Length: 179
Ligand SMILES: [Zn+2]
Image (cartoon, rainbow, N blue to C red; front, side, top):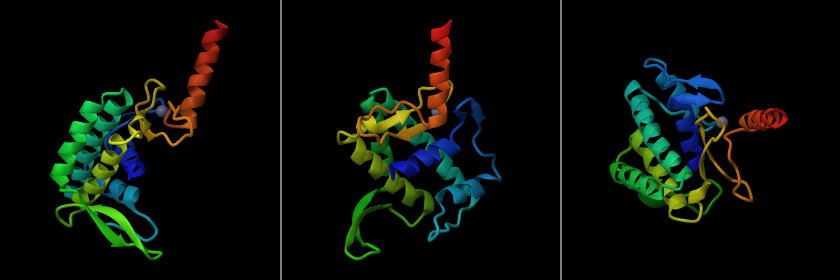
């Protein structure tokens, strides 16, 4: 779920992706962008304009969580996640897993796209922040980029959103050394 959180933040909140300016998808195109983001081969959600706006608002809250956690401000990250958990009414539930057995999912207070996704994502972030995985929520350090990521590296030393940003910073550092 933290991976989905990254996807939403990176596609729906304004800022920079590398050196490219990112704008929130304009009203009228939002629903399509959100639908493509969430779709999987076995899951094609119906996304209306209101739901798309709700997803943009959710992504803005999620960005606050990532940005705070990335600088070690876990108080802000935790408070923001707590608000989301309450808003979405996240409830743990065991659902039949596809391959047999049971899987733990978090459901929202009502069968609504934003609430459902928000409930699952907020619970995923709560589990990360409440464990030693808090430091795994990151914000790209390749100025001006501000895309977010989950650090799944062994040594938890990831600093950039992508290999593209990493190479750009490496090249910049190299140029700086040569001066
Ligand atoms: Zn980046």
